[in-house]
Length: 545
Image 1 (tube, one colour):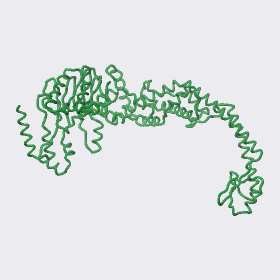
Image 2 (image 1 turned 135 degrees about the vertical axis):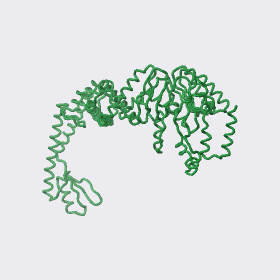
Image 3 (image 1 turned 180 degrees about the horizontal axis):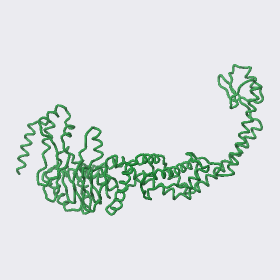
Image 4 (image 1 turned 90 degrees about the vertical axis):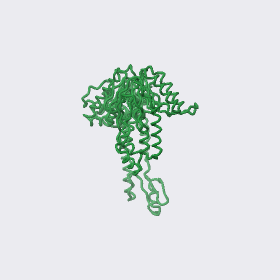
């Protein structure tokens, strides 16, 4: 398994996929089916990244054509159940036929749209029109966004409908004659429907209406009474014939729908192929828009077991910071097999650095551009991230026990080319044992093929020529007293502290202690000076041993 659910959650991979916007149900299917490209699939990933690069360039040059394309995507419905019914030999309903017709029409519109693009579109993502079905759904030649069982589909249907229209016209004429006679006889005005409503108090007119041979009682309320024209024998005969013809029309419409369903079935393969092409194209375009929206670049895939990131950004953290009008500090680092330690005080961004490394690697292997100025990597067999907060109550394990259980599983594959990220290794136990276990794990992993990155507070863990050491630059303050005074005045300790924190990573070439930013941070946060002086004395004594 390339990545566990826990690791995916810890690196905020869901944020990336939530912002990868597809517009068709078929694009959603391909998005959900996304999986990482593994080491043996290097060439396939390189080809996918080239496609994204092409799409990004096209979107930037032909923005309105892609807006048009995605607008068509929004109108594409999920036809899978309808296509299954066709495959099973069922007769489609009028609504289902309408939806198929709309899909066929959208294929033609997409084809015209894609022809505008200066792109030799790969066949597997190129929807193509189905000319025969276009003509089938538009027998009159006019392309309209409605569906109707046209007379042209059946001579019998056309004849029945003509007869129905003739009878309906005869009924209209007969009713008109009756209406005119009643109005002339009674000197009243009937509604077009042949009805008249009068007040019950008008007894004289009430009696006249009741007594007229062409009128009959219809309905009444507390105040009014309504009469309507009676059906004559001719009208009754017409209505009887009309009912018979309607049944014939319904049967013939079924026969037409059956023929149409059979014709569509012949092109089922082409429809399904187009559905797949639309899904792939929708997802590819979504990747392009994601790359543009988050200012991402194409990662370079290499054979050497490395990860190189130049000004990499964590897009979720960056977006959250933007909401509070703050900037994200990009990270730059170069990793190779063995162990790399990242040191620095709490609030120094070490955890975010780990998340960023894991997220960018995973994005690249899922066939996405990455939020970095540049990135080089070889494909990994797995990525693992331990955040040191793995208490397992159901197994009776402490935080430390849960962490070690996970790490034990990860290092089983350390001979493979993977990525192990461990945040504050062994923080859940006492410092002496924590240091010893951490050092032993580093010793075990430093000669393995996997790339391991560990953040720590323990002094001396990175004091090894075989262990690469990065340090968060930390607080960048010249006048401590002035800044401390400002923090106390504004009562915004944390936000001002972030302002003066330099989150960039610098590689430490010489063996040295982990920086003591903790005391400086405590001083800025207003901790009693007597305590701080004592802490500095204790620290000075401990450094002599």
